[in-house]
Image (cartoon, rainbow, N blue to C red; front, top):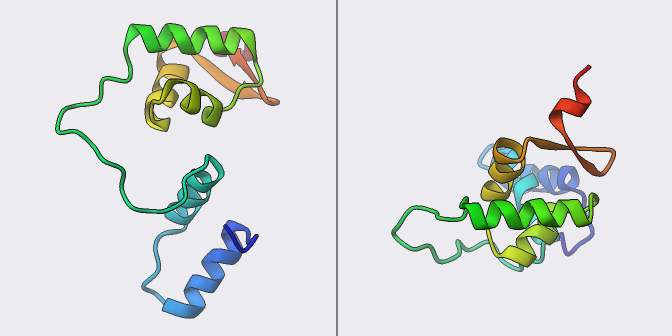
Length: 114
């Protein structure tokens, strides 16, 4: 990421250096997504020993308000604002609010099905 490589170029370099003992491609793409959101290292972040409580009504309402104000808002911007993880944001957007990204805008699923 810091060398201005694409994920594919990074995977190719990993294969040259480590042969078949490289992470799956999806893992490398996930690393790049995390770095683009501002993460600076790959160590696991601290986690408490209790289940996630990110998908709650207050966060669902907050995400709804955010996408109503700005239909072009990104996962990273929602994460920075609310401090919840990407999986929780995905669950809120797709399962609770039934929206999807189309041409860089969040729209209701039922408006896209015809």
